[in-house]
Image 1 (spheres, rainbow, N blue to C red):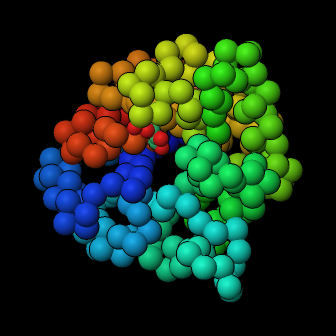
Image 2: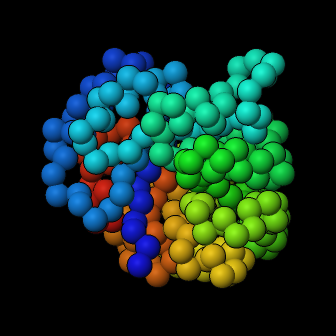
Length: 245
Ligand SMILES: O=C(CO)COP(=O)(O)O
């Protein structure tokens, strides 16, 4: 049985003070989420302070990206080992915003995922098609291309990753994939992962809200959510976590 996972991706939002207020509001109402695992991913600069606020709670710390390199002359990058030092449990890699605005290839994303795993953390590998790719009937081909370097690089450790399916057209647009559309892609991803597939949690991301979370989580292959905008509102994020519990 796969344990559901809800992760809040705060992206590049909020001052440290604002994020502290958000977390305190979340922790104040934090009862009743026992079965689902929950994590929040602040910007790397805030990880230490957010980690301190989370200590004693059952909310895990996550990072939004990691370098593929272990250390050295890579200005602006943050190594996986540094994230591990701050007790991060999860690291998002290959978010569409990184692929789109920072030209990250699927090969680079796979290397980042491997670097995260090597430091004892869980990579959350994001995949997803754009609207024009969907309209052209290329959704599954795109997902397959994005996953294949990860599958090739991970081998037997593939069961240890988390995958997030985030259709680009649903991110921050208020347009969610229908539960049926998401389920079809999740089932495809699980199939692509082969024998490891049964164990891998596959999250859906893209305009997840309290109003649509339950219907998404009811689908067989949707094991949780990667939440952007709604994770910045304590009430909404809490409601999504409850729906996964
Ligand atoms: O990109 C996302 C999470 O990583 C989804 O963002 P939204 O929930 O704001 O659509």
